[in-house]
Amino acid sequence: MVLLTGCEHVPPQFPDLPTMRGTESSALMTRTTNGVSLSSVTLNKQIDPSWLQPPIQLFTLGPGDKLEIELLGEPSSRNTTIVAPDGKIYFNLLPGIDVWGLTLAQAKQRLESELGKYVRQQPQVSMVLRGVESKRVWVLGRVQVPGVYPVAAPMTLLEAISMAGGTLGLSSFRDQSAAGMTEELADLRRSFVLRQGKLLPVDFQRLLNQGDVSQNIYLQPDDFVYFPAATAREVYVLGAVNQPRPIPYTKDLTVAGAIASVYGTINGAYMHHVAVVRGSLQNPQIAIVDYKRVIRGEAQDMPLQPYDIVYVPFSPYRYLQRYAELILNTFVSASAINAGSSVFANKQAGAAGVFIPVGSGVQVLPPVSPPPR
Image 1 (tube, rainbow, N blue to C red):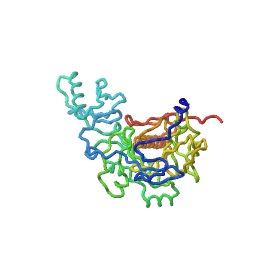
Image 2: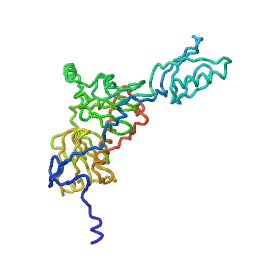
Image 3: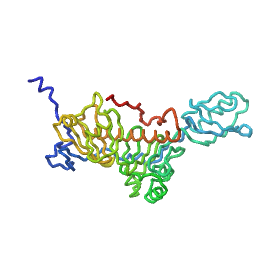
Image 4: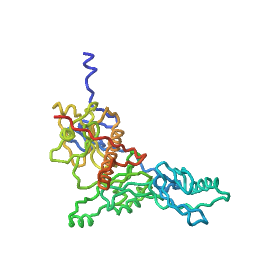
């Protein structure tokens, strides 16, 4: 009896969630669906005041940057060179000079110092930055001109959106529909900025609809800005499943049906704490479903809505807030991978791989083949 009692499963319990059964009133509780309660989650994330200030660091060189170099007094010496993948530049008769991470002034000084070893008179060098490739930001999704944009000077989020032509408005959407194009409006509730694998707490509705400049942060190299389609009726199934991906929403779709659409869970999945996240990225609601009991017929399944996120964890979670943050970070990283893959697949047919910015925290995993039937 003692051994059997010790092996009994304990229902999901979260200290920061008053009740999971929908039988008690709570300020956090918003709705009960088939006995499963959706609860609002307050994310402990605020705009860092330093993000609203222009960075004080000077631009530093990196691979791909284009430089125009000339020895003063010798016009024939003018040459355009590109910082090599190893961070070196090659000019005149000099061997490779490492300039990776140096400012223009520091690179100029190092080049003059190296040239001084070969000539009697101290040389003077003119160095001009002609192109930036080492520092870029991604602005993808439902904008006029999605792409990867260089960052040669401090750039705000609004400036980056402006460079991409702005989000697709209603007038442009109508024009494109009339022309037979299928672009869709941007969903500001689920638009996001991804930095080093983390979701930044930027509210795009306040920024673009209300003109709230407190959301207009300065971007950093490798930041990923994404505007999903407002009319894409999909459900995202992530975590410990065979094929994490978005699936088309259909009427009467449930948690069990969504997981079955991605060929079920994998070994090690913790099926008692399957989460459903609904609403905007800044003010999400979350429900915990005991999927193990659902498939055993011991509990009712939960119906889904378009844009829901279904997440199957690898281990139990105690704190609902941390669990929600994990799910949202996983969601935005997966969305960034899909968007980036689509861009490069369209521009580079037959490309060997997908470029993911260094330090973004985004990883590309090989696709998982469906299990044999």
